[in-house]
Image (cartoon, rainbow, N blue to C red; front, side, top):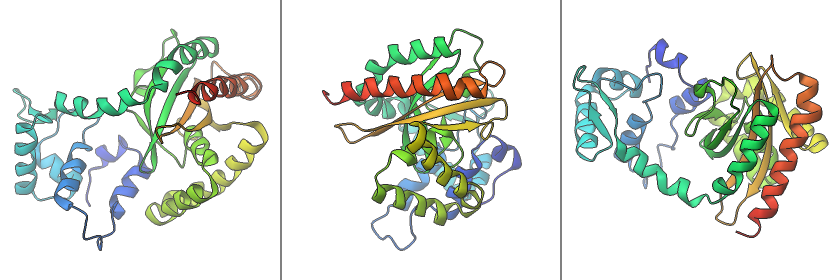
Length: 280
């Protein structure tokens, strides 16, 4: 499935590797490939590339240009895409937001967590986010940033980060039960062999770290200038597995501070929310 180098530079390489292997086994006769292709097309758009032409979408998805043209026409009619008047390219339309909102609205913990996340973000001069799993990534469903100059492209609702290479992803794996963890690690191994070869040892270490400290840490693995800790909350009554992180610039928070202060504070925040979640 060909993609341009500029596109790859703006996408999580683990997610790209996952997509290249095919998310669903070809022998699954129940799988509606047309629906899958339409959603794959919508997933091509990103904040760094909000406008894409039929030709660019064809390159990114591996679909033929006539097929892409039919998809973009249909998705425009349905309100999920709209054509840019100046360039003629396509951008996501409000229908995409409406599609995702019911999920966000049903995660009642977001509203309860927000003031606690805001407080920790300010104390740590950091960003605190709540995430859920999407394929082999964690996608942010709530985020709080300190009032300091914090880049929004690093922390915002809807951003996704690889499970394999991040503190929040490692915390998610550590919080799984044995059966779920085995299935997830096997999926990583099969779907993303390059990422597995790079991060398998780190994932094993992260489970040991979580058992010893109650959180998982990352020092410049995802972004060289940032460090992070992650803590799983577990599964809520609605069946969604929730995980949190706290990310800070290395220039603001030292490794020692992350280990002795920020990490334990995130653990305490999540424990407080866990107690609340039991009543939901």
